[in-house]
Length: 179
Image (cartoon, rainbow, N blue to C red; front, side, top):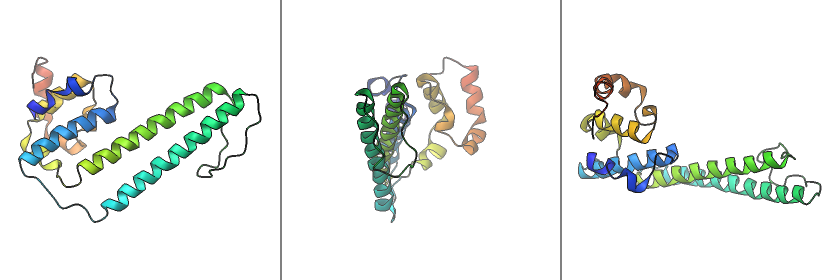
């Protein structure tokens, strides 16, 4: 894990989104899990889950397209048309800044679901939790999270944070802890 996580600077930055940081961590975890042979069968409902994620992405993209068309009409001074896609019954705002901010939020949500889809597809046959709980030195994970400015709650559940309280103390007492 140390070797895999030490490559973070070439793939992500401190400014990367939390989703990108978590995906990087899980990919490092996956490499170690494969090495330890922590494999599983692909879940029966995997294709349904992937289909549902893709449906959410498609709906968000459609709404974003409608929002961009709405923005163009507003900029030209035309009256907005009623919404064609009825997934969300609210009408779009008429303020240009609000519309542009809404487009940015749609882009962020689409990116988040794309990462989720990628993650689910890449990790469909691998058990990630076993290595994290039983084989990794939690101090490495904690130090890495501190270095990339990722909240440890995104990696360790509350139960694991309680289990590894000693590791938090070690890293806190030794700020130069290297992974």
